[in-house]
Length: 78
Image (tube, rainbow, N blue to C red; front, side, top):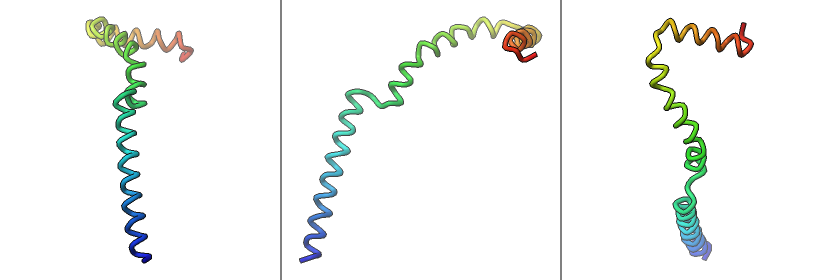
């Protein structure tokens, strides 16, 4: 009798777990994962940074070092 109850309990647990996973997948597909929402929120900043890339690629190493020194001074780095 105890073995039968144990098997029934295992079956019910597995079924409930499956339903829970299904609900979680449905909600995630509907609203997106928290990671996807966070990435969507950051996308405008990523786009703005990427837009600066050509400007900085055109600079020489010496110009980049000079800018780094200026940024350090303005940030209080000496």
